[in-house]
Image 1 (tube, rainbow, N blue to C red):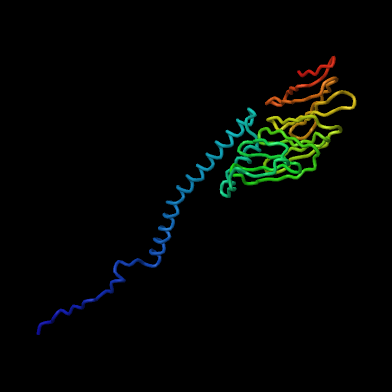
Image 2 (cartoon, one colour):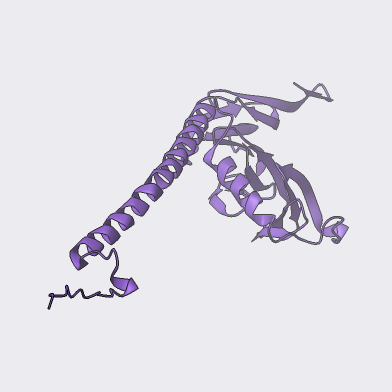
Length: 248
C-alpha cells in the first residue's frame, strides 16, 4: 500500500492578510500624523510671515508720515473707529435739530461736529451720534484741525481739546478768550484779553505745557494760525486809530 501524501489547506481570514504587527501599525499612524502636521506648518508659517510683513509696512508708513506731520495717532484711531462704525449706521442725513440752539458747525474728516448751547455733538457719515460732550460755556465756539477740536468760551477763560471720541484735556485762562487755534502737531494757541496790554497769545505744546507767550500792546488778536511743524505762529489783529478801525 502506497503512502498517500496528506496535505492540509489552511484558510487564513481576510482581516489577517498583509497585516502589520501592532508596533509597526502604531509607527505608521504616528508617521502619518507627523506628515499631516508638516503639511500644515508651511501654510501657517506663510500666513504669519505675511501678517508680520503687512504690519511692518504699515508701521514704517505711519512713522514716515508722522515725521512729515501728515498723520497722527488720533488720525489712525479715528480712521479705525470710522471703519467699525459702518457696521452700525445711523438713519442718514438730513438730521433735524433746533436751529436756535446751534452755535457752530464744522467738519473733521468724515465727521460732522455741531456745537450747541450746552454740548458738542459728533456725527459720523451716516448721521449716527458717536460722541456727545456737555459744556457750560456762556459763549462757546470751536475750531477743528487734524482730528482734534478745540472748544472755547469767549465769555470766560475756559477751553478744552477733544477728539471724536473723548476729551483730551481742559484748561482755564486768567482772562476772557478772544480766539483759539490748533496745530497739526497736537499743539494749540489761545488768544485772551489782558490786564496790562490789549491781548496776549499763549501757545501750548501737545503735552499741554506752555511754550510761548506774546503780548500785543495795542491791538486785539482776531485770528491765529500755527505752522505745520509747530515752530511758528501767525496772527491777525484788529485795532483803532484816529477814530478808524483797522486790521493787519
